[in-house]
Image (tube, rainbow over all chains, first blue to last red; front, side):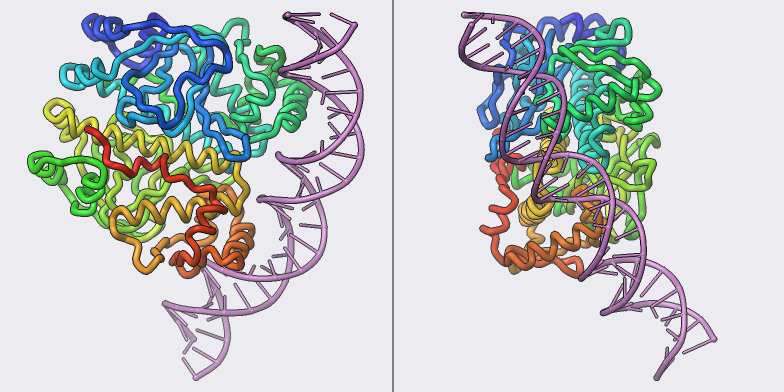
Length: 238
Length: 238
DNA sequence: CGTGCCCTTGAGTACAATCAACGTTCGTGG
DNA sequence: CCACGAACGTTGATTGTACTCAAGGGCACG
């Protein structure tokens, strides 16, 4: 849970007692293979999961067989904390790479709500941050051209991974193939391929073999019109 | 606050004490004119708002001047409950029609968190429902064609308004012009106009003068591939 | 060394944007 | 009462971004 605690501490003060409560909440560690769907839409949930390592996506499927990935979960994030109040999810949760998760029973979260209002508020903030990311993706999907959406995703992932020390040498691992990248961006795999070439030729970024190399952050940010305000990176006041 | 209580009761049991607490939380009623932006992105908030009547949109603006409306708030909804934990919003909140809101101070919500864990959970559920709607919109914006997105919005609004009795004779008021409709759907006003004609000719729906008339719900649902599961309409178990 | 997965490229198509103009309605003021 | 302007809706012509269909290439793995 170190990565989870680290991410929390990036935004909030955390007493040793609170940290203790969080660490004691985990009942089980589980591993999932790449492409495994480990939470299915509609099934009843009695626990939520913190992602310890690997990449996870929330996706919604269409009758036609295409799907939209609505958000990426990165190490340290909850993959389905909202399942605590929603009880059944409106989407699937799938591993995009081999990954490890920590299980927290909902009964434990109920206890938290009774005894740790501050922690409750911090986690409520967490689900609201997810919603803020959803809104930014709506903006991208609705109003920005493909190349800009793609640059934006690379910026967002850069910032979020940097929070937990997963960026080295201006590059980071992003174990998605071009089809999956398209499923995040609302693009077909063919168009992802062409757009990726454009970004490469522009000198902003290189993405191959599951690794992103930032060549020119300023150019990338500008193509994306990226403004990280929606990620609430600063120290929060409670 | 009747409409708010009614919406809560559609999904949850509510004790008289809880109802009492909610009603006593309102410190002020305020009216806003159409097109008035009453919460601006980035400004510090010390209260949240329940929409009592009228229509409100959350929107994000782009440097180019276009904007994306990321969700509609309908009577009985919070317009910015997430502002309680986020403190500053990543988007604007604007009246789409003349509207009336009830103000609830954040200090009151802090009290709620300490003394009413069940109510807290109900409102946490509320912000998670908002996120579920955001996800469905992401799916629409990323993967569905314009006509399907439009039909979907009409279906969603139908269901959500029906919850609070604002649907009569298979029709409801939706005070948006074609530009604003496009800002929800990621379409230009010109294309909205043409798509609206298609829907009209298909016999599914008619939208003019701010009023939606459902002519053939089955056809509309089918064009939209609408499945209301993501709206969590049933009775929730806590 | 064949099979499968992923990436790449080309050709043709379509959905939606852009640009431009005109129509309708309605409120305001001369 | 009519002229005017503003906001909104409608239509046509053209362009372009992204999709579809189709084929081939690289590479890892059994």
